[in-house]
Image 1 (cartoon, one colour):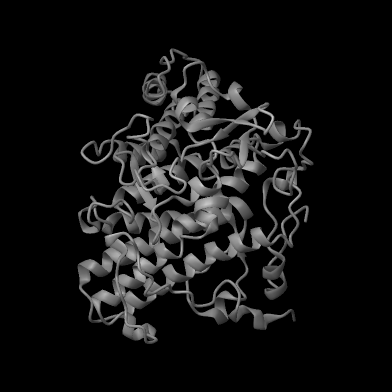
Image 2: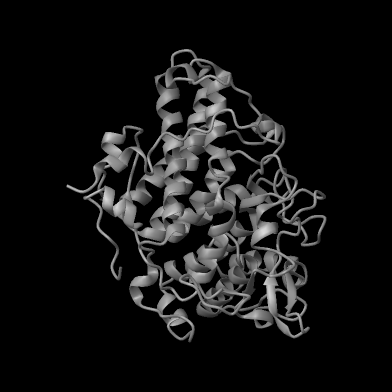
Length: 455
């Protein structure tokens, strides 16, 4: 049997980040410095909430604020290194031994472990407030669903871990994507019932999950599954919360990436710093990555090009292309930006696509035009279904470039990876590249895992 002893040091090791101090009040809970047992953690509301905060804190890692933008953008037709030198991601030649892919897999499962720990610990506790307990479990289920969404979309069939028992989880076989999606929807349904409907519990900071975050992710998942009626319904539920959310303009003052902006549904806070990690790594004035399509991606006058990109030139002043520049706060502190996980614009485009596929052409036009008009573009009068779907795909590309892997996932779910990427000369593309390799350490430590095709 393969090296099973690694199970205690690999993905599912206990990594509950208690006691980390946050610069955001809603996550700021100090704990005693001595070691706390799981039983004692869930015996008081202070330490139990700190455990919930620990799930969010475990998301302040490279995958969530950097690699989800940069790696997924490169494996798609979106980002190329400014240096012009191809790498394993931009060429789609990722080896199963790649350390970054291994870390991404581990960080997602680490967050899942922390969520499972909270669910189990609070469920067993007899001393916690019942209303708060339901909310905390709902938060954990939402975050677990969010992680599994990326795991199954990046790796396909993955272990579905719903326990903290490492003897079970370390040797867990892969579950089908159908089963993973079923669990995601179950978690989101449960979460939606018990999450708060505003941010008053969180000091008005949009850094923890609400009912509307669960509804937003439910809209996305149903779109991916081709459940148009359900996708539109979940999207509408959030869009209708006009007292909390509204589409903002794209300037430096009202950017959707500013902390607690009216468009933001969920953001990840940063700890003990006054700058965004995105602004200091992916979205920089130096241009770490260029947009592959450059200026041709945008129509004349598109405010997204004006406000969300920057021209890049070499030392000789030669124009190289345009780079994504959505996060401007690299090392400054005004205004504060946060990694924006979910925002309102996605829901309009989800509902637009669902409406087109349900033959609600006028409704789809209205939703598309909310996004186009915000970008200072004229509204569309298209009525042909295929043309509208093409326009929605283009608007999604323009709206979410270099953001949370949307382009890579959109090409996958619409079956357009092969036709889009096979014609690019710098890519060594094969159909099996639609999934990333399961990391070699995971394969080595768990004999019940099967490597994805092509690796």
